[in-house]
Amino acid sequence: MIIDVLRATSTIAAALHNGAKSIIPVDSVAECIKLGKQMEVITAGERDGKIAEGLEYGNSPLTYPGKFIKGKTLVLTTTNGTKLLHMALAENAKAIITGSFSNLSAVCDYLVEQKQNVILACAAWKDKINLEDTLFAGSVINRIKEHFSINCDASKIAESLYQEAKPDLYEFMKNKQASHYLRLTNFGLEEDIRYCLTIDNHNVLPIYQEGRLIAKKEN
Amino acid sequence: MIIDVLRATSTIAAALHNGAKSIIPVDSVAECIKLGKQMEVITAGERDGKIAEGLEYGNSPLTYPGKFIKGKTLVLTTTNGTKLLHMALAENAKAIITGSFSNLSAVCDYLVEQKQNVILACAAWKDKINLEDTLFAGSVINRIKEHFSINCDASKIAESLYQEAKPDLYEFMKNKQASHYLRLTNFGLEEDIRYCLTIDNHNVLPIYQEGRLIAKKEN
Image (cartoon, rainbow over all chains, first blue to last red; front, side):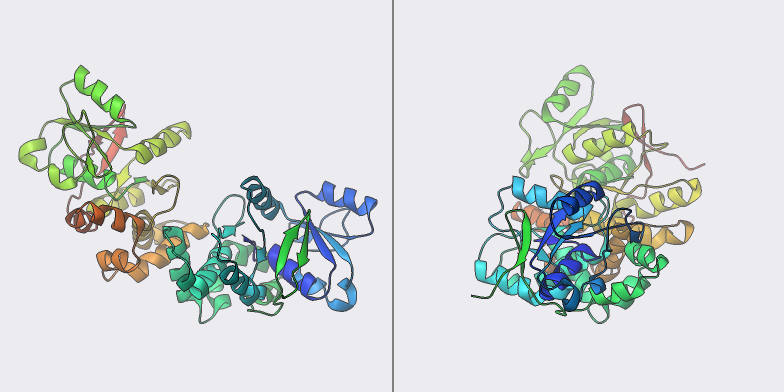
């Protein structure tokens, strides 16, 4: 499971839950522009808190309500997320899904049903651990640990952290002055942070198939 | 600062505090044996909880009382620790010290005095995060954070974890079933774990100079 809570995997959950046909994750603005010229898609991505030059929309999950995104394909740049996706493909992962607080229940239900080994892959920020992805991994572990054997200290640390943060995730991020809290607040995006820390507001299961993320229908 | 609480940096603190002349950290048993033949030194290192073949002593800090180690040079194999040492040398670190709960106060006092940027380098285990090194990093941050600006979520996670574990570090390791707790307990080394989680029982400042760790004398 690929995790990039602020904001790629939250935006993926929002767009798919609101009816997007599929999402194509790409790692660069250039690739995003290229696909935008080849296909009828919406191109989206930010650099330094602003819509990247040459693209149409930003990275905020609030940008993709149903009346706009329904039935459309979104090409989304996400540097760290795409890197993890390639790692998962290289490892021959049986399935690749994306997770965020927005779709916590859907991904947890899926993981429990599948009964497979799971890697919680936190995108974080430029190869450094971040608070929100660790918290989300902790929330998943907290929910599903009874169904798995866990022999990994990082998982235990993540769950401990989540237990501490659980009463108010936003306040925890603020009190700790988390790096992404500071960065996004600096761009005036507090509302995005609150939205991305809301549990199950877009409870969909995004699954990666043939280069695209689609919403998996319930059996 | 290089951190490998269970047990390399705890053993380094114990041996130096008990009067060892110097400690030569090496990354392999073969290198340890080679130095043992070239110089009059004590060779030490373990593999799978036993003294490695060809070496004389193990990795336990309890093995190095003053009556044995005083005035002697110890060659210690420490795979993960030596790797970090080479990374620190490659980064041209101004100073390299080693830290453990055994010498928490000495390293904190030094870091505050120096007024330099600090990297808390946790050796952990085969490139995976572990609980005890994260806890120690957290304890250092907890003590000295007012003297530094910290812009790193990993540091905040480590400090949170330490705050939670502080009342009883051993019980915390046990309750969480930390990977190293399980591994060492499996080898019957509970006493080592307790010893390595004791604060300031060997309050010395090990500093790396010309291939060796020596105890820095107070100014």
